[in-house]
Image 1 (cartoon, helix red, strand yellow):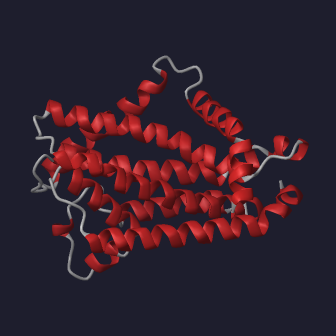
Image 2 (cartoon, rainbow, N blue to C red):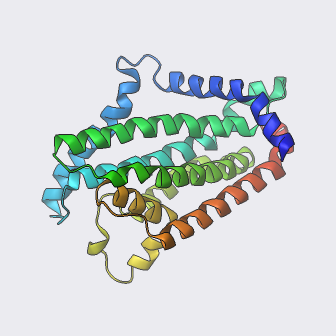
Length: 258
């Protein structure tokens, strides 16, 4: 274990450079640059709030904040995992030239998405202030669901990055999968409107548990339930272990397929 930690510390400056490169590449030639991390969720929230709160009459207090919380968590998962999927392929030229721990390319995609997540969370706080939604002390516990979603997405990203090197079709299929997962996560709707047969299916989605926890500490002034935290930790650890195992099992063959 100490060898892996020393190896990570050795290449930490490279990881920082990769993260900076990913952010610069994403906002290259953009006038507003990183400000889009605030504007994107805000603009989407405004549109969806108008449509869903009026068209479907969702009986949710502070629906705009409720919706934005859902966007923040799900958009991070979608962005981090989708970007991680092509992390090895897009860095093929560098991998072929010098030795670099290949997992760094996945980590850089997740960490760059995490920076966007922090900016999006700032948008949540701004909207809460603008809508005069009470800020509770429980908001400091937001570190729990954010940590869980980061490591869960990291596990999924490692798995996708390894599989995509051999099977490029995954890049096209995953966009469909993300759409399905979005509708199986209570991002835009409250759980109360779901039929009884569908609720257990939605609750089986790991993102649902983390998102509920995020909303509880941010806007509901509720402490995370111990059972929910335990389940989320188990799901996150399992996903991280599976993703890491598959990645390390296949990384020696990456150079043959990129």
